[in-house]
Image (cartoon, rainbow over all chains, first blue to last red):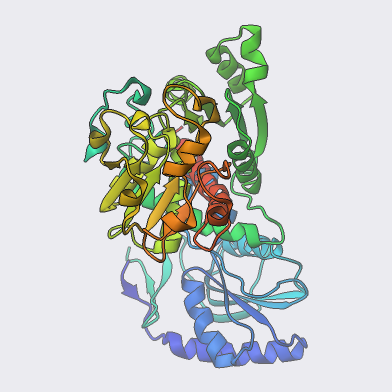
Length: 170
Length: 336
């Protein structure tokens, strides 16, 4: 790891995302949403979006380790953090925030976890980076940056201050 | 550290489980005893348990992590609370659970433990949770299972009860945050208690400064010093300045034997009352593994009072057992 994605200012991207997200929620009449960030990178992005949008409901956070589909292959992520969703999910408009959308498996797990807290009215997915190559039929409503990367490349958000996008050299 | 010494007392017979319960990478594969487990592993168990605590607050109180796994509760000795929390823990992990009360089934028909295990393995069991009145029973089973099967000790004889000890450590951490400056007193039948033995080992590993055991001399092991605890025969002295009091359940069947006088006399000397509680620190935490003999080990006013975290222990028991099940099964899958 270690090569910074050049010509990219993460703060600027999040600014643009906040504007698009506000418009999208207004257009779909999704008022007073509950934002939930996925540990760890997604939560960093969510914290900034939550502040920029001035959302009233406190920010929720989820760790999807217990909902992953690869437990049988790789066991438990030892860095698992508690999930904290501070309000009722039932009947709410959710904004789900993650850092990188790739295969779609993390978003699938996050959706399953959210539904175990209740039945939301809607879920809007916002991601900082969409790097394509989906393995599941999922798409993001708000995308900060589209990256075209070969499968052996990895992209990772480091933070929390400053937020930097890095890819591995090879 | 005291846990490396082999106590002489026969009631504290300790099979060597240390190598058996770790895989080649030093991760937990079975959970048989806290003895010789590192501070890192004990901390990992508590950290994962912390993450599972939120599952109880979900509308659907379940996570899918052990979906499709089969867990068999093998109880050769009766227990309601421990079996219920293991049962609930497995169900909250989405595993399928079978509860077998062997005391009243197979072995009474002459089937050996190994035959029972082989049969359950043939039904593709992934985990055995074992409770037995003989020390070393869970260890024996762990030594004889297939590589992908994990074993958790839910109490064996007077040897160990590691999940009870870990739920107590987890509760202490929640309330006191840090172990290093604590004075912890364990009160009751130390001699016969697998809970006390596991607690003392865990408290030592986690770096507790002052561990005390308080009991009549007849209920203290002769080698109590080698356990890594200081013995007190006087409750008031032993309680002086303590942060945490762990009461043990008194086995009523021992009452009236040569070891103990009457319940009344025991309560006079070792029963926890509000008056005696005043000798401890003002913010002392009172714990008990349940079920309580009210008016024998402690006053109802103390059990239900502001210092008591007894029901918090019950809640934590589920999260800690979920953590141990997930960690061991995660590692056994990768290894096997």
